[in-house]
Image (tube, rainbow, N blue to C red):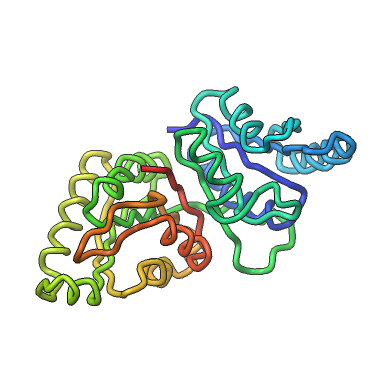
Length: 272
């Protein structure tokens, strides 16, 4: 699926916190792992390069110190494009602001400019900068709401589960508030049938173990966060926005942002 995992590092412990996942993914898939430091101030290039080289040597991975040239997102995309089938991985908070705000600034520019999924992570616990033991992803959770935009993540979720050797879990959030507003009958029967059908289709297509769940809650991001519950072996796969369905949760950019804040797991995300 991906030949190289490119991790954006900015010198902070927060940015390094994604490395436990990156190392686990690299070991599980055999993909190349590389670190990149985007330098927006040439005066600090030598110091940044020294730090990056030391970290890469400790992890026994590649390192690339790249000049931003005034545009951090473009520099990151250019380095990613240098090696085909590269997945960019980045935390959503960094010391210098280089890694940007949640789904804003640099992260959104990378999503728009690369036209490809990006792996995002926001750590919850206090981090020490120690990469720690690699985390193996055993579950890929794909939220869907029946809209074409949300459905479009199915391909990435299925391929991701197969690539990682993980179980695929398709979920949907049933909003009782939306049901009442739409005058729709309550109950899980139709929603469960939809989620089960998608899980079976994707599981068989990609040859992976699969399951499905219907969640309940009027705040989709909280329902999803409660379901994954900071489980270290879980990864979410979701689009940043989707069309609103009257009786199902609408997975908007705000929902993906909410999941980044609350779920405590990495998210493979893309624009629909």
